[in-house]
Length: 463
Image (tube, rainbow, N blue to C red; front, side):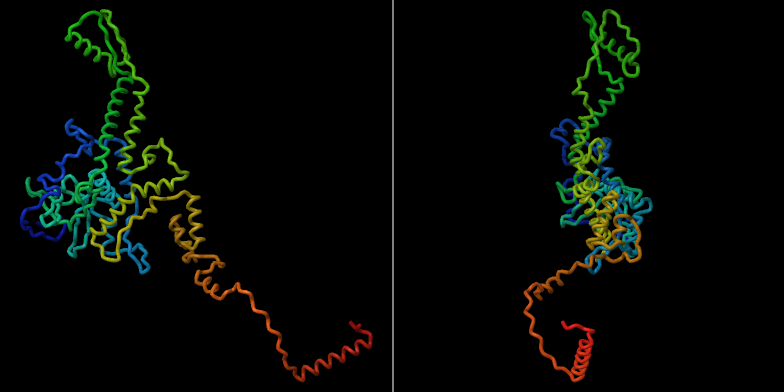
């Protein structure tokens, strides 16, 4: 079998015992009973991703996470001699990171990767290789058409359903192409049941989403009737069931729904009493907010990020985004980077990195303070601080970190301490008499003679 879009062919051989889905059954992991709430299976209540995605909280959490990760810059990095990861380029690996396939940008590719993982619990990416064996394109597959298979020896394969965008055609109705794990990148959510099976957050919050949808449907029907509930039509005397049904049908067709407000004519002493809804039962907004809370909890999204009526518990946005990153996005980002590095077979010292600075963008005052303190502490050079906090280019003389002159290294201070600079100084030695030359004696004699003459003449006075 030829792998789609590659120059490689796989030689098929029958494996003793065959290949089995991860659960050991004949239908993979899908037939395993996983209820969204106790008794759902007996009540024939099925929670599907296509249904719950209609609920605003599930849609908001899914799109928020996928779009936030999709907007981060994806770059190839290389570890230098100091152990620091620096952005770099490579003719073998950079092209696929800029354009993963012929129909998607890198942003939409990442969004589809994360969305598939959140909604279905698994992301399957098919690789396309050139004659060198280098990956030149990546295709996110439909997770409902991919089935992991495990051999008795523990080797992993994937059975692929038809997917035209990736060039996968179904051989026949009973046999689909099977590729080894080396040709598939498998990124999965938390594997609660099996190492090859990720479980979507929808599994835990599906019942809350269905409840929210039911509330919205009931509210739609309620407001479609001009926000008026039903009523009771009272007829004096006895009436047979057929006549009662006829009166009910006739009344609803003439005066309910869009006919509300028309002139009501009652005969035979009939009386209409409208039922009322109490204030507690009518608090639909509060009930909808309650259903959103467990959904946000399952996706690990702070609720104030999808609900504008809630105020974040911080004075500025940076701590809120830090919390959102550490509790929700970080695990998806790390798993994405690791899976892509392994899938591209990157040799040392290359790696993949998503730039989280695109997510955490501080306000002007905070950015200015952070840039000033990082420069003053010698942690960053002016050029590095300009690029990191303001997106500005380098300037002359800004490529070197600076510190004030009075700062000393620990080594210099230790050397000073060893010299005992604060010890009591030793007493000064007496001056050693020096020899006097004949020229000095002559000059002294001349000076004494001149001083004597000045005293005699009264020019100087004796001290």
